Image (cartoon, rainbow, N blue to C red; front, side, top):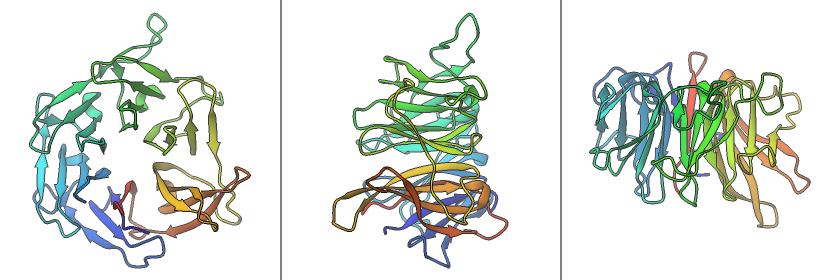
Length: 305
């Protein structure tokens, strides 16, 4: 397995594992606001050159490093709501052209830049919630926690404060579609989506932290909703997942197989889930207590092969 990167927002660092069996992960970062320092880091991404991007939430910035030694430390952002400014960014994502998308949570918007120097600064969204008079609340977001772009270039947003997933075709807001919000108790209810990523088929994988579950959405209509519930034996089920990443894998016959890596933040675990031919999700591997008892894990990404 390629190297795994996991953020720990309580210990203000990035953990580096060679695989789920790695007993002694490496570490990048300590608490602070200077070079080599983070304050509650959250989402992660890796570009085509292997450089690592971190949503440094408490420092209201995005950090890029060339490697896990912190070489080439570069930042974008200060506290604010204007150009070049963020307020508690929670996630980062890179599209096929390595353009950087940021879930600028406290400013209730998504930001896209062409590079870490801030060129091409473009935003989408403003604060707002669905109401009886405006149930769609098009273009309105509340504390967006995650963002991703699929192979078709569509942008999906975990609109956490509104309990829904939003998708647009571009940052002009064309093609707006939403899954949720739904009443509490409904099978469609999202209790607090914090992480979304597309799988190879284009479906959305959703880490619903508040709902203590994972979902796959084939589309943003009610059809094609699949709860991902692993068979775990004596291990506890999902207690609160914050991030999910599809993992390229093959089965015993060399055929493509479905695997997911999940940060189950509430239990300080990294999980690998595998789906068999019958469609059953099982717990294939796990790592317990990454970072020790003081850790609060959040973001996850995998080094490109």
